[in-house]
Image 1 (cartoon, chains in turn blue, purple, red):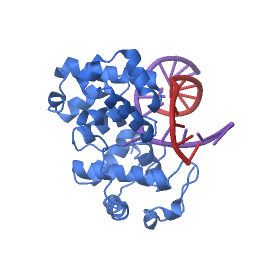
Image 2 (cartoon, chains in turn red, yellow, purple; image 1 turned 90 degrees about the vertical axis):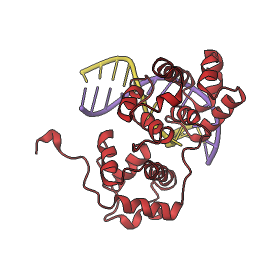
Image 3 (cartoon, protein in one colour; image 1 turned 120 degrees about the horizontal axis):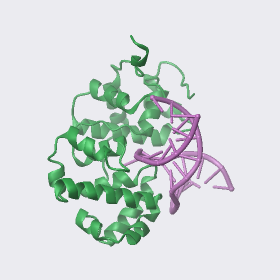
Image 4 (cartoon, chains in turn orange, red, green; image 1 turned 45 degrees about the vertical axis):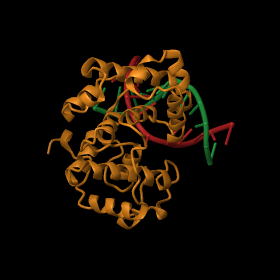
Length: 230
DNA sequence: GGCCAGGACACCA
DNA sequence: TGGTGTCATGGC
């Protein structure tokens, strides 16, 4: 096999077992927390490298300002938008990102989410990735949680958990980790939804950056060897 | 008072 | 291609 083609992940027959174990222990996570598809999209952008608690504060701000539809948000002056976004951090950047998304929606879909989510998944993903401020994780979160498309989301918790369970290299590319899940699971948006949410829940509780609480981790019985965190 | 949080991007070699 | 700095608030 050519050097550049070495797999960064191993074959994973136990991937679905992981899921059942997590679900049995933690139960349904009811993701994505958001009342409408637009809220899900906004939340996906606002939660970038940011605690969800802070995002909720911002969503409350936007709700009070009646700015939780594309049309209403577009009418908000930039200075006002920036002010409302403060609690979730990076507020100047995120104000621009939201504007960029609204621009895509307006230019390609007449400002209508109903039209946007009629587009084929691959095309919509490409368009979302072309928006400055929307990367792979955010695009896939939008596709899965707002669009209910069978696209597995890879976030930092998922990456960390896979690495600590020796299922992937620490620096494996996004698409490889995504393929790992998509190739080993039924192509079911609801399953992808719950699985990713469960991985985040496990990550938050047991798989911290510095001191992973591995003995309490629900996935522990699956482990063959002690962790290597390097 | 430091660390972390459901990233993305520009810039550099 | 891969590494590094930047963006920023709030909770623990």
